Image (cartoon, rainbow, N blue to C red; front, top):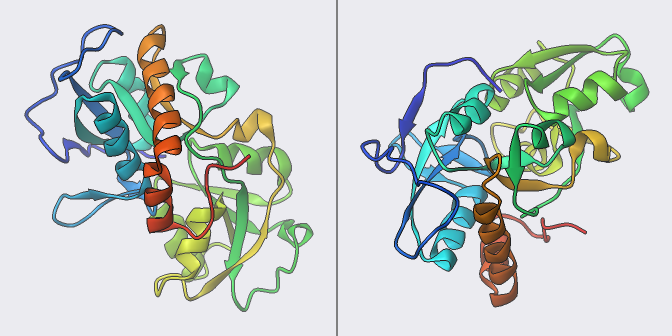
Length: 258
């Protein structure tokens, strides 16, 4: 999603010591990488606090696994290389499980799954996807949504942005005609004061090859034991009601999906 020098620990920048290996004992410390620029899933506030669905889910999973977790923010374009370089132990940042990414990292099972959507200005002449031909379509770079636009909306002029905030500004100011992203991200934005300019045009059909099987927790290749522990913890918080508690804090429907 970007090119930037921002990389710091939101909770404790001092502790970038790596969790070694794929076996994990109670009381171990995990460093969790996230983006911090993708509300309502993860967002870095002005005071340095990380908030959002991803963050609350991560904390619940760490509690379930009985490990201490700290968070590090990392620009999206470099988040997988940073994981591979052992700057953190796992990525919890709304990362879709796709065949392309599975060549680079391993994943837990999904912890949510929502479709893409298109948003436009409220007074836009664009009434359907067919009207996007020749129009400027904004998307965050290095995302499944950018890949989706390249494949399914090739008649539009795709414009890539480092962050979701930047494409939102361009749509609001008329420098983009439409944008594509997760339906939840766009829906929450258009309901806010900042997104009062705009509306959801329509949800888009999921392309499994591009959109994947949902958002999962990424770990380094071969660290399947850690991925499996996250999968078990996801199942546990789904069963004990903690997932629903977090879900209902942000959404009025179950984002876990089918």
